[in-house]
Image (cartoon, rainbow, N blue to C red; front, side, top):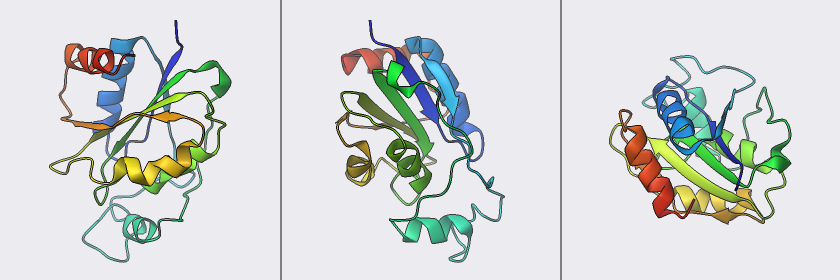
Length: 159
């Protein structure tokens, strides 16, 4: 039986709620991806071209530092990675997270929350950060998606 991890970044708490429900539904460990410098409300103002999130997302090579790491990442076979959709893709902190581990032979499954955006170019943007891993097609969920629906989705992916 494969060992599963749900790792997530949540700027406002919405993704955190979904990640906790998913971890419970699929029997996975849980890890919150914490930015070294927490995001403020002003940092997250996507309407402000000079906000921290806007600057980061306009530079696809930017990798925000992370404050914590997963201990014993090698024990996990399946890594669900959750995040809010920013500019139709995963925030670059997700690339930072993925690139700090050897993911060879692992399965990476993106999941996201968003007010209205779909997954956009998320998988294309994450592909290079998942070297050696099988990157499954990601899916966006509403914040209130229940455990049964998440478990069914995971089973449909063969996990």
